[in-house]
Image 1 (cartoon, helix red, strand yellow):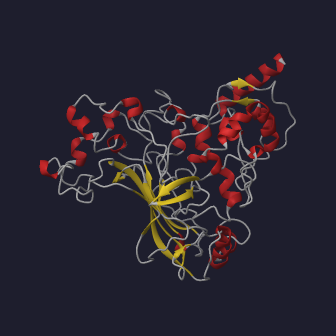
Image 2: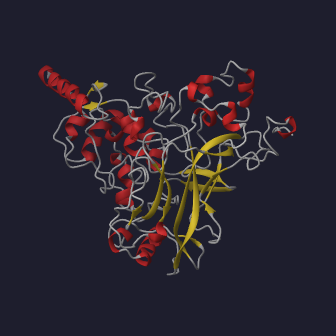
Length: 463
């Protein structure tokens, strides 16, 4: 046993030197508790459950498992999450489960019959791997890659690292930095200028440092999947409500979120997707067309894109909740539909000015029923295989349980993503004139002010 332990330890150290995200050593050597051979994820979980049944019970109550939660959205009680939201990236997971659920912390979610009550389906390793060698099959419904040494990984588990979290959160929407804008591969080992909190030569925060986890429940909400916003936390958790030495700056805290001044730009190192036009998909072209960032501006499978780097955020009032489009809601195709949009305005004392990434889209909708279509993109009958929108719509809407008229078109949409990461060093925060100057980044009238509040006290929020 002693010889085996040191063999594993030496191997882990060696891997740490050559593998991105690999840890130096497991938090707790499990080679005594976990025995092979094991050829599938559920076989690993069966051994985990011998000691961690209570942890599994807790985990199954979280949105990382359920991909949905009961919440109030626009005055309606709904069960909403990744499993039933519509976005303007790949539209919906309905009918696309084997591809989309490769980021689910479970095994075998290949269609609507997945058993959420079975603890044996939990994927413990995707969050607790410390070796940097655990991966899932990209189209395997959450099952691990066949090349993974499951015994080795299971014997070397520990607390999640940025690598574990980033495996899904850095690559949402189909690639690095596609969806969030402030979460990408650069965050795994960031320099101080990219993120002052996670700077690997400085604070080196883990994700849990801010997303303080209890009973496997991780606080934090995105507007798209959790518009009800029930588990927020603020910078004041560490920095207090009056973090500045200047009273004038502290006065801003009542109206302006910390992120607004301290995240001047996002997508600092890796370009993020800013728009996706599905209406041009299917056109002949090899996708060779690239933009100034070296990113593909067109793909036959997906249509046209726009990317951005060092993007200045959009600024809107936000009170912690959001409006959101629900499947089956009627739309006006001649207007832009906001799939998610922060709630709050200048009169809302609970709201502050926050920074957001705006992602615009043009996506398929039912021209007779006047609602958006959850298209089947991946797999048999999917658009990426047959380039047949009618077939993709028929199969996707069947998976969603909504009628499809047989007629489709494309309509414009917008989604907002709150910017929280990529905090700059304090010397790089916005200065007064970045906002309070002619041509500054704040659109005061759009925010509800009569003019720049620094120019005249009567323009202040209290008036």
